[in-house]
Image (cartoon, rainbow, N blue to C red; front, side, top):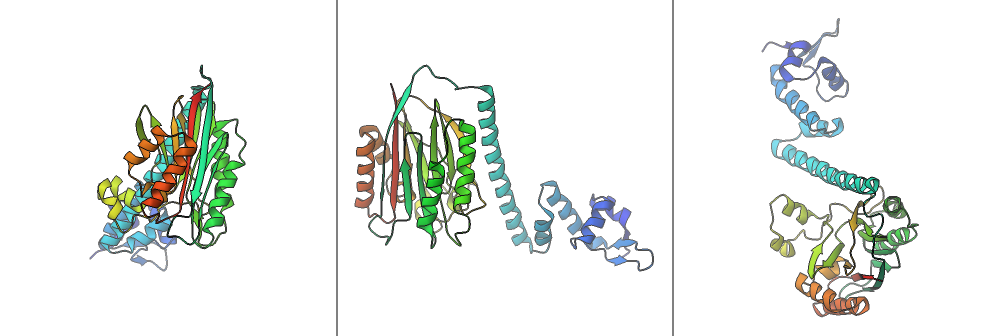
Length: 339
């Protein structure tokens, strides 16, 4: 078949001649022939499909290094790679959307003052459970900071403790900066721990607002007006499948990949952050998956509604162990009350 000049190929592929020269230099899309005397590039018509795929992938923002890998894959594998890339884009966009909302709230000055002064009562408890040899969870509750982390890997205990201690040391005052410091310090605290890491779910309380710092599958719940709400999103394979409509929430508990994380604190990865308004009477629960994967939401809601924080954490741990205690169990309960 007759070869196309670089201009003809550029028009047919919707790529500029400049882009084609760059892709040639990068080894992404080599010409079929390069004239040894004048350097003119010529392309085969059969290369148009690859060129158009490159153009489409660039349009969705895929980096050139990833495109190079995708164009060399069979169709099904390439499709899975593109789907995986887009999931990362959506997760990143969601994180940025939440941060933008935080900035809007911060700059507008909403919630800067409240007419009712609030106080907090709280309790924390962690337990090895009945199956695990060691407890890799770590939890903390204080006047302004509440956190739960679930470590994994050879240094899992060290990772969970380091992440929580990093958050604990954040100076609370400016909530936006406190959240940013907490996320960055926690990420740095677990850097270099080989194949180990941790989940992290933390609340930072300031005035009428809570800053939520979260990554992994530990959770935060809010009991408000008798209704229980999960206010975190699990960073797991099965939750991604639910989000994509490939799995129903009821199928999660029996799925073989239910414990596989897609995001965790491993050093170099920072948690997501968001700001939430608080009300007098709010009750918050932070829990590792050794609690919320064992107890149903009705039980959790009933305990939070009936018991004060110390009684609640004691009862939740006891119930989880009575249900088999298959994993480490950690929880923090915080109750905001009007002074």
